Length: 199
Image (cartoon, rainbow, N blue to C red; front, side, top):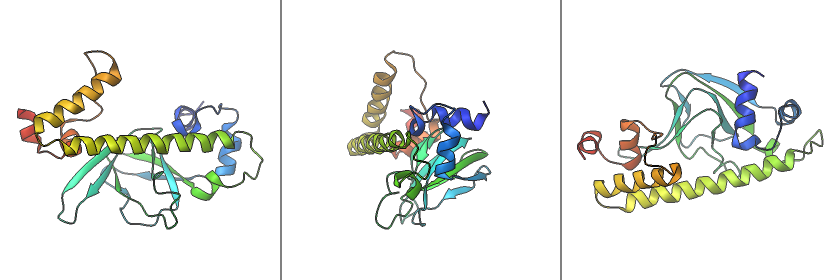
């Protein structure tokens, strides 16, 4: 099994689809592959969204920027992670955030009409794909809601504490690895890195 197939089989979007069925599904979905270098923009906020993105290799950051130039890292994407799914099925879909490669990355884009449209091959697993997409969108909405909760906390210590407690609960043990480095965590919590490090 090649790396491309291994990533897709483990992706939440293809959960419940085995590797033998994957080539038939990909034939239906007709993904577009693209490669990006470190620092290169994969998408730009406000650009026309024609398909849902899926990271195949590398790592990318989802970034929101204000009119004043302030930058907030919403999340870090790893192989198997989707982006653009929240806005993909809007009437006039546009990328809601900028996605930037944090290292050399490979991405596939799945045309939105292929995800929810009638499958040309009458693929039995297409319903699983749609259910997976709905679950992913719901989980992303809940994650964004949690981010809003962090930002409503006035003190930096309170934000850091809430963030660490959430990851402690997810890990279920006192020792755990955070998914963000210090710069990314500071951007995510909208605080300065030096102040966060001191705290």
